[in-house]
Image: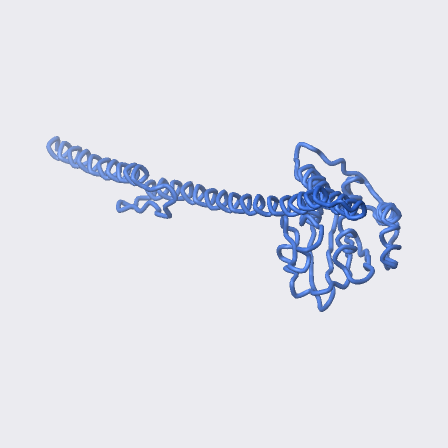
Length: 294
């Protein structure tokens, strides 16, 4: 009996030793894999001794490797977008600056006072474009700055819109446009930051004035507002990228726009807990934003 017991114990110890050895081999395999794995590789850990514990360890490690891969891909996307933004910004600044320099050189070479005056006016206009661009950059930086908190409160949408339209009245008169306003409820109230909502309306209406071919139609449904107007060539507008930084449709590249106005709109609306979207139907561009009802 004692001999049998000893034999069983020896066998049990041998089995435990084998299992421990297999565990150790798998753990060494994992450690070697992690040490030899090249950065950026999509390889994942595989196991031969697939016990429940080993599988859980391998799955946990693969999950972390997948998370690192996804983070790397996202970082590469951000870096690529940042480089593209820098290239766009460099172009947008260089173009008016080069124009201003050219007119100032013409000013120096000219002896005609009227021609000199024209050169100064043209140079000033191009420097004004640069000023507007830097203003928009500051506005965008403020819009995305999470350390610059928004104060959400109950706000009457129609009152804010009316205030913005009053300030832009001369621009609409100049175009001989009369915006068509269709509110199903002029007393509708949403949760918003007043200054941010004013900026949203201002940028959307400025966009309509700059790129539209007729007066905008401003419609309210519930807590959503839709601003629509006809555009010259809707085929060049990519609605999926309309809110990207520095995005400009091909037909808008010769204008004085910065490509930041709608990016500011999207950022502010999202920070107020809302959503924004754009649609192109036939000859019309519609931009809709929705905020939380108060």
